[in-house]
Length: 218
Image 1 (spheres, rainbow, N blue to C red):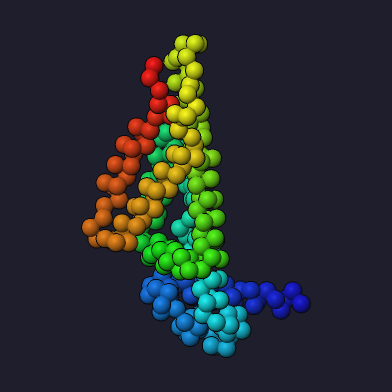
Image 2 (cartoon, rainbow, N blue to C red):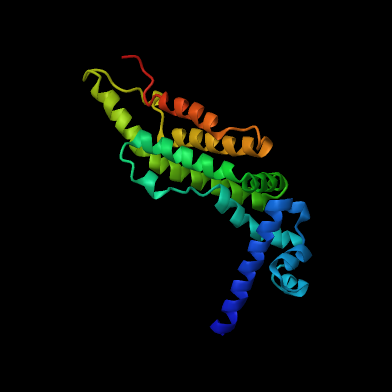
């Protein structure tokens, strides 16, 4: 039984890869069961067996789109950076480069976002993916926030206390980082020839470096 199931799972993956290729090149409007069958080199009936209707195929493809656009990738060279601020900036640059290198991935994300306005299931999956993306970034930002907070506290007299309402949290920094990363990807979609990721990163780096973890007068 397992031997019969494995080839079907492999075939389904092949069809999803073919579907992603069609959608990335031509958009979701061009995605049909027949175009996927042709791209995957299988019969139309085989595609219908796995995905009864186009909307089932579109729904199944969303996980791949979110993996490409809303799952944090941390290159080894970035993970090895010891200084938190430098590590965050390197991670920002890596994500900006990755998402702007092929704008078709983020264009698909935007198409799904549009569908999600009317489809609660798709909207929820996108929201959860973005929450996870921010949480992962926050976990990698916490060291920066903790270090800066410790430095600021150490520079104060013992009578002075930190106003917690003025503290910039790791979650807040992560939210800004996601906006910068996805803003970069969006501009690469809108103006792929005129957009310069280096300029975008230079501005983002200045913004991140100026973030005050504690915004209180000495």
